[in-house]
Length: 216
Image 1 (cartoon, rainbow, N blue to C red):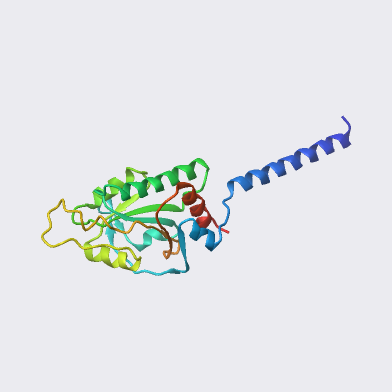
Image 2 (tube, rainbow, N blue to C red):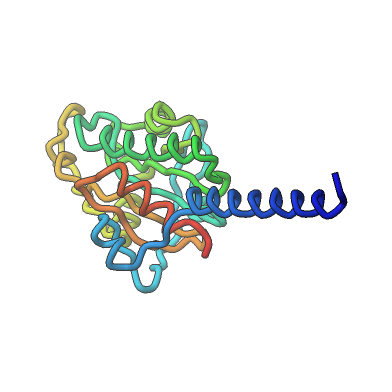
């Protein structure tokens, strides 16, 4: 085989490899959505991410969870409770499926996390809520804070949390049934970036989440 033919074949192979690489990159790189597209897909992005004050919650084995947990990570935050009959399992399953799909695509999850905050601190222990969160994915974190601390954070994040009636019995949950069902997104600077609102659609959730958290 002459030298010119070898060079030509080499160039053709390199060209084909480059085209294939660009094609694969296009398939695996998320499409960036416009603010209007994000809104249509169920995500509201604040023009300017919002600050909120520090807090002290606890996870399993009295592990402190405060605002530092958000640093350098994209965090999905959901307010729910372990006895929740419907909304919480649906939302947590949605996030679980999101993680499974992202992992199967080789998406980098090292700077991503999920935090479940109980709105029923009178009945959910820190161990209870962390165990509940980890039942969906072992990397998820569940945390509990005292009622005043919970109300402070929830108010700043526009989450409706209703205080239980006085002298309520332990099985009473009517004050919890109409809780906010939004899934919040905290950015790596520890600021409230936006929220996903129901009704949820798995495909739109996946597309939108990737668009928002992927560096541009």
